[in-house]
Image (tube, rainbow, N blue to C red; front, side):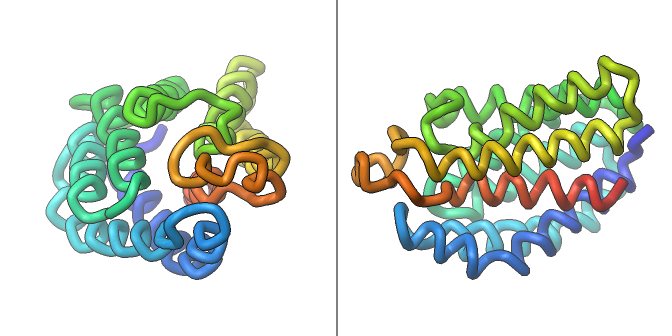
Length: 207
């Protein structure tokens, strides 16, 4: 079971991971985007960290929605609304819950991905964060369905996300600023898929 305290620890771990990788994320974004992905995300998660103490007595749904709202209001560019929506939709899926079962955790990830698809009008295969998140969600659910513990299933999800992120180097971007490059976007790793992988890794490290 994952309780509210563990969710807060996961968010803190994500914030630290993004902060430590912000320069690399920005470098990736310099190549195919606006060059602000790492800086913007790090700033957003720093403000999330400052807000977390005020969420400690809330249920998991309220914590995740609080994180999402903060990201939307503090992160510029496309990633703020996308990740913010993801956390808010995950929060809706966990509404009123103080503990999550493994299945709840998978449902929250699925809801988050649905939020990104809706907000970004994107699908897997378009060189976005979905190319890491969608394979991760499938691997997580397959792992849980086959009887694995959450930690083991999430480890498989992280592996799937890493493969998906690598795959973004081989495809043309058709969404966002990177899409202006057309075929020249091939060979570049997607910053959003990379930051998504980092978030999943941070969650796994907390289990």
